[in-house]
Image (cartoon, rainbow, N blue to C red):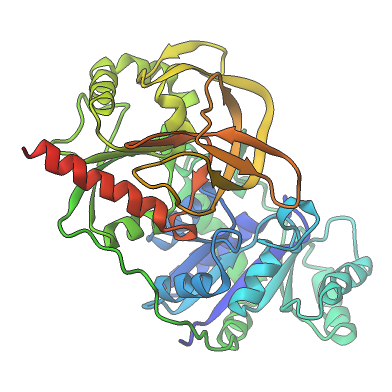
Length: 457
């Protein structure tokens, strides 16, 4: 499959990747290009910004969660009707698992998908030293895929001279610069960037940024580079499981629960699930005739008072789950199932009361990064789900984290027990990407179908 594509990477976090990616996406959309966007790694918020620009859901590509073949399959499936794919890297270009490998780095994704890389360089305080900096990234790995560079925070007077220097001495394409644009900055909070809905006049900011980039980036040459990407060869997906009749799955979806992998939804639907979205914040009751519930992460800690106030919803969820309705919950969704949850101001609020104990705030980031989950007991009617790749990123902990799985850090001796699980529940802090181990959603949906049969009796 021929997919014009580029990957925007940088030497470090904070170099302007997300801002420049969003600005370039807006410029491409303004030009009439049907654009697909991807975020490298386990990120929920950057794809929200991408989707606001391109008017469609952005996806994730993560080479810790999926092998090379599955990663390429997901790239092809999500770009089938698009003119160009734009990928945004994660952290520094070579920064991968455990801080000492390139596994799951932006470089790893570039290799897996054979994608040309444009290195974004924060050039503040540098001139000729930029050549040494860029050369180091190009030569650290011989297959770096770095074929272009964009200078961030560079003056228009310096750019022509640096362009000539780099193209002459390094043979790399200088594809433009970005001046300092303070009124287009995207703010951050404890789990990363703030949500798109929280930024006043976001569309106007992005349109202004796109207008600037039209003048300062060499977008025609960027498109030429994207077209030079080789064809992607991929085997057909091995997905075979499908329910013999559909099940209705309720998905908590509002500003408290908003961290979604769109490919999770798509895989569930391929397996035979009908997804019904509802709001634990605003809806008085669950949708009718549900066979299972999904609670993903988000910001329940910013909405504790409103979640507590919706007593009828909390009561109904507790009754359904204690009555045997299957449920999967992760991170913020797991916190919501507790008896109590602490908010960002130290106040405790009543939650659904399914899991005994409190979820509470800590002073630092806990258990951050990738883990591999090893099953310790029967889960969702299955003895052996196999290893499950997962990810944690939160400032909260629980008095009752569960012990159905052993979480093992890659390239490390660190490990801990986690997750509440049984015949109808899987709930804990780790986030799941279903293509990493499709046996997990399959087991969940099988239990939902059993519940549906009992419900229909």
